[in-house]
Length: 289
Length: 327
Image (tube, rainbow over the protein chains, first blue to last red):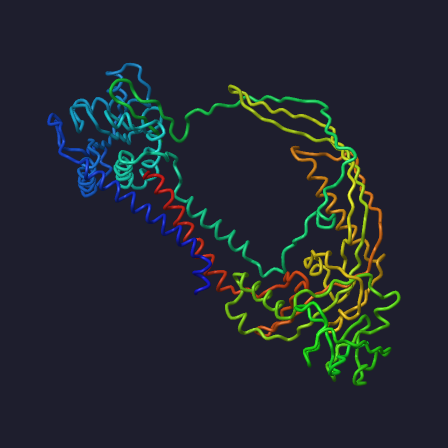
């Protein structure tokens, strides 16, 4: 046992350090949230509701839990957090407001209009806040669209990569467990607003398992030193360390050939193309599935 | 022949720790007196019958325990040109073994305490040391590939070169063991020896150890020496042709000219342990202390340690991702 701890002590020290950093960051965010949290300034908002489950993809209990979580996170981030699910075509609605708008932006038009109509914004009407519109209806083009609309401070903070990251995380769970997906949206938003956002890549959940497996396999291979022994001679062992002498050492250029290939630009077919944020006071982006 | 102590008449042996002849009976140093004896079948000291093998050049009398060097097997055609004396003694060799065992992570925890020693011998192993002058002529076509993207076009540029190398190299004392009893692979792994400590042959260094004469002539074993020299030449040639993505040989010729061959004795400690009904053989380089030999593997350790690594690395990876996401 002593041998075990002597050998693995660094592994456990690193693990402990990571746990500490993780705990420290969470505690830091909480402290930051507490320090900055105060009552909302915007009294003109037309509703206290934040979870609009028009698409009926959540149970009453799940809606209630999300409401409570949003109430807490709103105070911590000082931003309005809104969630809307739909189950209807937005084609007519969006094109009445913005003729010629593409399929992928119907949800944007809806999100922005919804935000403005209800005077959302934590600091002032149409102020700091975020709204996620997830329309479960399959539009004429066969796709389901989702939009994350950012306003005020949130718009300034969220880069395209950050929007992609949060939507990627929502899409990881939304088909199998919408509640978990929307909870992820709220919690990710909380960390994004309080952190410095240096990591915006999507890392699939199986990656740590694969890394762990490869590390264990490598560990076994490297330590199977039941083997006889290691070769410790080199090419220079029997030359007395003397490098070879070259009578001729020549590299003569003969010819050159260049081959070109056109790079196919991929169209946003399968997973989810996104288009840039709309103009005016809103930002954000969308995904489709 | 044997070496007797002038002071007490005991058997004087070469003691690697002291680097000189030593009488374990009266603790006298350099007090040896050479007693000649021609017989291969009788002990020079006590006259007891000896049972020696075909190639044995030094052994120990099973009756009186005296170390005997067989004169006719270290003279004439069997006289070594040089000898590398033992540098580490029995205790240092055991320490080297134990250090190596504890470094091998999957060795059963009770191996060190439970193993029992069956045999422990210091042996002078016969080696041929070959000298070569290598001349390597090489001509080939090397290709360097460069790829870049401009706009929506990817460019791949291939530059072709004529690569010529004429390389000279001297190999000194490429060792090949000349003992049937010693496995070639193990003897190769024992290398390298520090040739700076090679000495002219003196039979006194063999007192206290076992020894063999060469089992095969130098010409019979030369292929192995050439193979080693070829491998080293090839590696050095490749090292001089860096920067190419591919190299297609057009002409290559390696000429290995023999510059001489010498017969030498090299020191090896041989240990045989018994553990849970099985025997395990180890060889320790008598000069450098390098250990060669397989140890048993505890499957319990392999399983528990690898599960630990799997769990810890998975957790570390997960936490690292979470931390980066939170930042």
